Length: 251
Image (cartoon, rainbow, N blue to C red; front, side, top):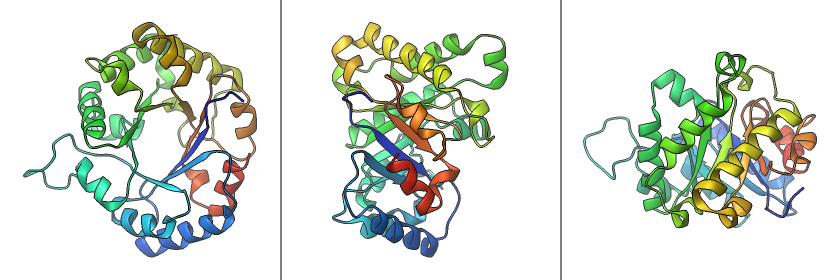
């Protein structure tokens, strides 16, 4: 494991009522009473953010939004601004998750605006990138990632990019039970780190954290985390059960 402090982030997606979220948050806090050697972040549904943040108060556990809109306020029914997330207790926000891209039509341009909005209000964006099964089969992985990174981060300065986290989530591995092998994930993470180095300099490339996401479970996290360019995980289903998530955090 490298010197960059790992992040283990749990994305609860559209699971758990407010009551269920608070129960899970309290249990996770109990299980992690001794501070782990990683940053722990949970992204509950919007309606549960404030009560989960309250349940985590003083524990060091952090809360993320699963999405945000790029405007600060206005007549945008159903959307949530970065300032709203901050006021509810968020420190981070997931941007450009593959489910947002493929189910709801988010484009790289949308991702770029959301990254900027998150940074402007003090949130740490966790910007997701990743290729589909067809794109990998056609050996387009690196060209797809180059486009997503370039479009998502264009016009940003190195100082701004210092304030974000990258998450590589191959679409073909999300919720499918298929996980990239340790070497497959490392190859892509090395590419992304080199991309940052070319664009923003080696110093930033050496410090930015790049997470892996895609069917991460307690039985495969250790191998992934042993790779030199993998700095943590963005976890879906395995984060819903506090006991399972604790095993991931304490890999």
